[in-house]
Image 1 (cartoon, rainbow, N blue to C red):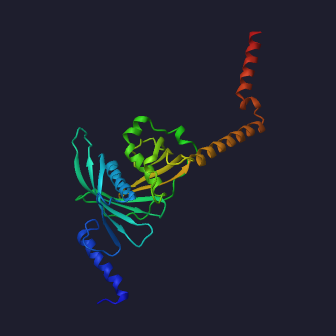
Image 2: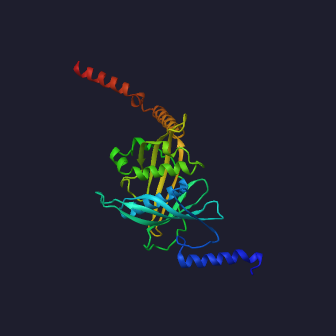
Length: 302
């Protein structure tokens, strides 16, 4: 018999043996520090678990060039004792990369970790078809700084065209739903999100491994303040294979209106500087410049 003070250490040692023998995804029996849940038709997985499983498939598709879509989550194992847990999910996905009905079902194993409670800071170290090997290196340092609104309105400079939105609607919507769900304890309104515009900050295309996305959307579940913006940055660590999504959301008025005001103030300040340096009012006045040109032309005619 173990003494009371020794019981946790014995349980941890037993769990370690289970992990070494079966791996976390296929652990059998009870395990200290882990909670296991099966998902059924009558008891489906929580919304966040489903979104995390989709995140793993998105990582796989981005790196492998496939088009796996989630059918359902079979089970998940959750680490306990931490406010920011890790999720180990076993799910079934279908691949229709070639199209034309040549689909195949695969069992996926995905691990997603919350790096900070209540914030959209997620890492995915494992996203694989069951049986595939992976790099065992672990991420030691990750960039978890939340993305900020850029100096220029991205919707006026980097906006995606309609065909790009249609071809990538699944993961763009995933980013938006994650940004909303992580901050909504009951996850209400996820099916009432209408994407209006999407922009990115990179010229390499929307499939770049490292990029920031700006999603303007309407939250149709709200009578007021329904015009919102989600900012999501994704990055991929080539050395460790860690895939990272970091983001947050705002009311559009908190970003665009404020930025327009600042731009107006900057423009006025610049005009004042021109006048104060003695460059002449005509430089800051298109009308004055046009009138001067007309006067000069009149002199030439005369």
